[in-house]
Length: 115
Length: 110
Image 1 (cartoon, each protein chain N blue to C red):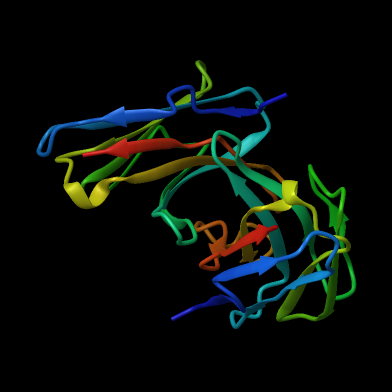
Image 2: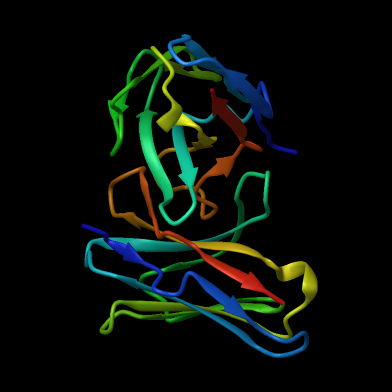
């Protein structure tokens, strides 16, 4: 069974902390994505990566950075956490070339609370 | 500017009846449409998809209809069951892109 695993289900961090959210997929997918989900705003794309060491900004990259050193791992970094970054963070992966009709496979999400 | 719109934030349906979730889009370059289902505290899971060259795709109780001229798609769930209660996201992919564009979701309560 294919999987996208996010390292933490729940996190509580203090304002100003540097926060790392980790995501690992075992499907040898080329593409990986980070979204945040907020009530009434749906899923908003933060960053994505089409290949190792490659990254592109999504719709709301401010306050975030990412790292993809290995194909299976995509990390989201909150450089200095703020309360408006309290959210559900979702990692997803997909294969390239439109070969999959399933689009993305999502992880279970990380509920981050910044206090 | 929203390219994928789900105009109903919520929908309540009686068990056994039909649920119809709607989605509108503006980008005529979208070539693939997908529906995802999301339970609280879980990631979205794929439900059903449709290519832009088709107008209907069916999978068990779930059917997706695509009306390209109206730039509209809908998800029909028949019969609706309590376990169908979740947030449903409509998503679209532009040809040649790996990114999906999501709507804001519709919360279905059965």
